[in-house]
Each structure stands twice: as C-alpha cells, then as structure tokens.
Amino acid sequence: MCQGRVRRLTPPAKRFLTLLAFISPWILGFLGFFVYPLLLSLYYSFTEYNLLQPPKWVWLQNYSSLIEDTHYLNAVGNTIYFVVFSVPLGVLTAFLIAFLLNQQLRLRVLLRMIFYIPIVVPISATAILWMWIFNSNWGLLNNILALIGIQGPAWLGSPAWSKPSLIIMQLWLVGGSVLIFLAALQDVPRSLYDAAEVDGANALHRVWHVTIPMVTPAILFSLLTGLIAAFQTFANAWIMTDGGPVRSTEFYVLYLYDHGFRFFRMGYASAMAWILFGVVVVVTVLLFRTSARWVYYGGEG
Image (cartoon, rainbow, N blue to C red):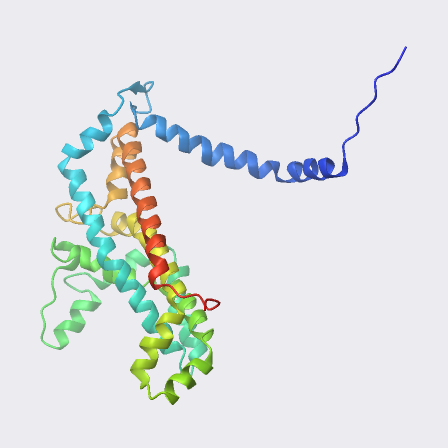
C-alpha cells in the first residue's frame, strides 16, 4: 500500500504566509473598520434608515430629494464659497510666511515654532479663542479696530461676515503648509539664483521665474490637501456658530451631521456623503490632470 506524499511548502510560500500572519491584524482592521462601513454606507444611501427600524429600500429617492432640498443647496453654496476663498488664501499665506522665514532673520527658529504651534492646539481650544477674538462687544479684533476709529462688524453674528470670519480663522492653521514650503524653498539650488542674477533678473523676477517654479510640487500638495480639508470643514463651524446666523455657515458636512446624528436620517446622510466623496475624487483627478502643465519636478529636463 502506497502512502501519499506530504507536500511541503516552498520557501517563498512560507515567507508569504509568515508575512500574511504578521499583517493579518491590519487586514482584519481595514476590512472591519473601513471597507465594511464604506460599503454599508453605500447601501444605506439607497434606503430610508433611522437607526431604530430596519432599512427600507427607496432606490434613488434620497439622491433626487437632495436636488429639491433648499437647505442642502444652501450648504453646497456655503461650502463652495469657503473652498474658493480659503484654499488659495491659505496656500498664498503659507508661501509668504515660509518665504519670510527662509531669510536670514534673527530668532528664525523661534518664529518657525510660533507659526507651527496653532496646528497642534486642539480645534476646540482654537475655536473658543477665536470666538473671543471675534466677539462684537469686547473682542480683541473690534477693540483694535476701535483704536483707529473703525467700528468693527458683528463678525460671527452677521450673515455677511460669518464665512469671512471662519476663513480668517483658517489662515491661523497654515503652520503645516509653512513647513512644507520652507523645506521646498531650502531645496532650491543656489546656482539657479546666481544664474538668474547674472542674466540681469531682479529680486521679483528671481522669485517669479526661479522660486515659484521650483516649489510647484509643494504648491500642488498644499492645494490638494487644502481642497480635501475645506470640502470637509466641520469642527470650527459646529463649535463657533452651529451653522448660523441664518444658516450662513451651515457647511456641507455640518448639514450631513445634522441629518445623520440629530434627525437620524442615516440614508439621507449617506447619500450626501457619497456625493461629497464623488466631488472630492473628481476635483482631485482634475487637479492631477492639470498639474502636468504647471508643476515642475527638479529631475525633469
């Protein structure tokens, strides 16, 4: 009677199984805490679900209802306003600060630390600080304006000034982008500046034709991360204004949160989440597609 051969694993197969065993906790966590909720939210977006009763299939009703929801369209408009103004201003501010810190200044290290500190402060503390700064009666900003004879607006209490106020606050949090720009500026070869100076370029021409082209990868990164963060802005508006006054700061994610966790309309909120996901993907792809025209990488000819 023949005994069957015992097939032994080859060394590559053993290495693969060992690797799989080591990363299996991450795989299980990724599937359980990311993939499964993601697919579940996609399913919920086609249902009417209030957390208390089983989901009821409604197909595209949630998506079609969004088009007729005036408050939803208002949230979309508020978010577009915030994205259009906060992202370019944030990138420009971060670049200017980094350019300044890249000069031979005294206390340069201290200044870099000061500009970085705001991004490590919890957003709740930052929001409370800026609520005091923007207070229309005894706030710091209006007191400074009063010293020069200007009567400050209501800021967070005014529909006209509430979104600009949050944009100003957002500029306080550009420390991360400042460090990225600072690293990019220090990577610009000194020989390029010397060559431009020999060709007769003044300081402004050197910045425009040497500095900016060489830091375009950092500009692309800051634009991309800024766009994604701006589309998802939530905490500052939720803490400082809760969407007011008169829904002027009711941004997309804040409106989504209200429907999901205040009104328990999970299907409706899931539909909004997937639309936001699609918009962010489209904007990201378009940004990458257009970047080939204006982003220069040092290794290119």
